[in-house]
Image 1 (tube, rainbow, N blue to C red):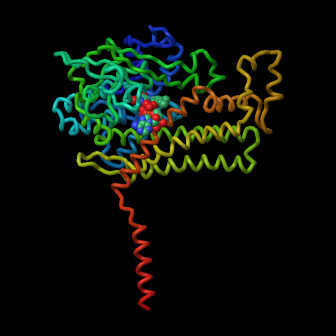
Image 2 (cartoon, rainbow, N blue to C red; image 1 turned 120 degrees about the vertical axis):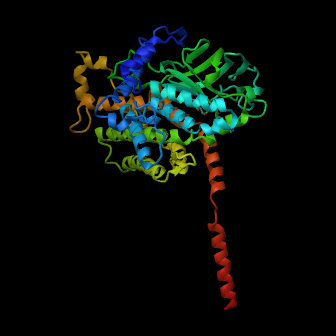
Image 3 (cartoon, rainbow, N blue to C red; image 1 turned 90 degrees about the vertical axis):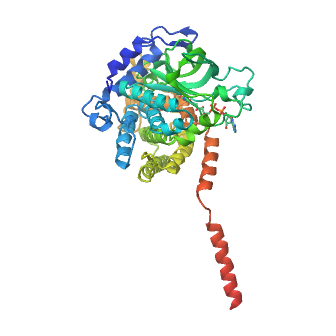
Amino acid sequence: MGIRTGAQYIEALKSRKPEVWLSGKKVTNLFDEPVFKQPILEIAKLYDMQHDPAYQDKITHLCEETGERINNAFLVPKNYEDLQKRRAVFEEFAKATFGLMGRTPDFLNVVLTSMASNSWFFEKYNKEWAENIQNYFRHVRDNDLFLTHAIINPQNDRSKSSHGQQDMFTHLGVVKETPEGLVVRGAKMLATLAPITDEVIIYTFPGYQPGDERYAISFALPVDTPGLRILCREAMQDGTRSLFDHPLASRFEEMDAVLVFDDVVVPWNRVFIYNNVEAANLLYPKTGIAQQPAHQSGVRGLIKLQFATEVAVKVADSIGVDGFLHVQNDLGELIQAVETIKALLKVAEYEHEVTAQGEAMPDWIALETIRGLMPKMYPRAIEVMQTIGAGGLLMSPTEADMKSPEISGDFEKYYLGRAGVTGAERISVFKLAWDLCGEAFGQRLLQYERYYTGDPIRKRAIFYNTYKKQRSFTMVEEALKGAEEEKALISNN
Ligand SMILES: Cc1cc2nc3c(=O)[nH]c(=O)nc-3n(C[C@H](O)[C@H](O)[C@H](O)COP(=O)(O)OP(=O)(O)OC[C@H]3O[C@@H](n4cnc5c(N)ncnc54)[C@H](O)[C@@H]3O)c2cc1C
């Protein structure tokens, strides 16, 4: 089949009946549920872009294996040019969503592609796992599926590993083997966009210990597999708020969910890792599934930071405060943050390495630096927006207020901005800013940037330790040696 259209994505979504719980109710019709409707339409637009002549050659290519047209996220990059082709889809999808949707289909399609292109890793442990991951990759690629993923176990007692939790099946684990496959029970936190995806892939971060064998698993299933419950967090918009009042929150909310597996059968051909702590722990560091998607999140993060910066600039300009020195200082800082990420992405692409299997891996140091900086830079952009917008951010009227004949005249008189900025213009800009820096929607976006890729503190510690192992810190010794040599010269003279 190859690239789907938006209509095909929606048709598939309507044909499924996953068990989705939202605010105490089982959602029976996902497409018509107001909380999901607009995000579904936003994802459908991305699928349509693949067929749009303005984007098609940029974001898709003909598959070498099938001859069908597929998304560039399924490309195994061999060189710099391939990395550029892949970057194009990351960029176009991110621009279409202002970088606010982190888990657009390209994200997990890259993860899966790098798992499949590193099937040697699975083969080391089990030949069937290697075949399964490759076949699953083909299935997702050829049907252009949209995946969610759940890596992290629920936040119960983090001081204990999975087998040390109070209940043996709080964390997702294998109950038993059957001729049909594994029976799994327990929960995974968290799977973004789960209700509106096609399938879920489960895999792990390192950290499992001996005794955790039943939890050391990786597999994939359709989201409507019997026994799988999708428990949504509280919605941050009810789908009925006006697009004028909430231009971003009404369009781009990514629902997050806990996945509960109630004795779910995972067919053997969908098992990628099972009962193997070493494989579960090494999957992330050894297969490129950290690095390749970091390229996607770097590009997406750049667009999001750029967008937040532009909103902050617009807020400042609309009320005439960007002539003040400290405002210029803050906005200059944000622009420099954007330029830093932009430069790091270029370094990551130029300084890629080609693995023994012939896969081009963007430079990990540059990508990890982006991952380390974004959890500081994005919250800072939000703080600057809050500081510059100040009280005005809270004071925008609603669309209904503006349409009310008795008070509508007030808005062009008391809400207008600097000379040349009408009341309607200033109000629109401030509403956009408030969605990003005030609304629960914006707070989630901030929390996302801090945590979507794991705990930033432990990630930076891992970065430090890996860097230290790979590099020699010799300048101190050289300086001391030089001083000793100088001392010796002086005393000899
Ligand atoms: C909006 C959002 C969307 C997300 N989407 C997804 C998704 O789609 N799929 C997915 O799989 N995950 C997703 N994540 C989850 C993300 O991977 C985790 O939030 C992240 O890995 C951190 O784990 P945690 O939230 O369980 O925090 P914890 O690991 O519980 O950390 C809590 C605190 O305790 C500290 N801490 C915990 N354990 C240790 C330790 N061993 N050593 C030192 N300090 C420790 C941490 O530093 C932190 O301050 C998402 C997260 C967010 C916020």
